[in-house]
Structures are given as C-alpha cells and as structure tokens.
Image (cartoon, rainbow, N blue to C red; front, side, top):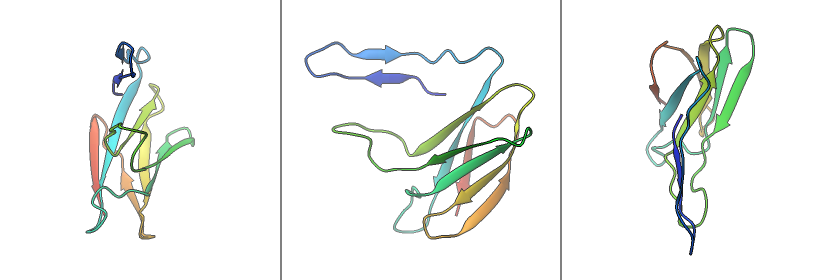
Length: 111
C-alpha cells in the first residue's frame, strides 16, 4: 500500500508512512481502458478471496482541489486468505474475470 503525503495551506506538510500489518499483503490494480477513457475511469474492480469474501473499488477521476492521485485501486489481504480472482465491470458495460497471480505487487488489466 502506498504512503501518503498531504500538503496544507499555511501549515506543515504531513507524511504518513504505511507500515502495514505484520504478515499482511497488498497489491495494486491498474486498468487500461479503451480509446477516449485510457484510465478506465468509472470501472468497478471486485477482488474475490479464498474465504468467499470480496473487496471492491471504483476508479474515479480527481480527488480534490489541487490534488493528484494515480487511477489505481489498492487492495490488501491477510495470510491464508489470498485473492483467487478479480472481476472488472468496465465503463462501457463489458465484464471480465481474471485469475489472481500471487506475488504480483502491481497487476495491469486491459479492456
């Protein structure tokens, strides 16, 4: 998971370091969309885990006044409960399912 830097008007910059959970794992999902929406803004990503649980994230553009965020979804999981698949509902209505590849910190999926 990423660290976070926050700038504040007329105040000090804050740097938050993600130390994670001991034994925990994380990964990022980057989508490559179609012409006209190369970052697949509006897509919904659902990660399914071995236990039957799931996590979801929707890609959005912009995150606030004078801010910048990469259009990537971050997910975390505990030891013994790895992801098994990733479903994507693309902005144009298509749906795809992808197998999870263990040990990959950044997964890039193309529409």
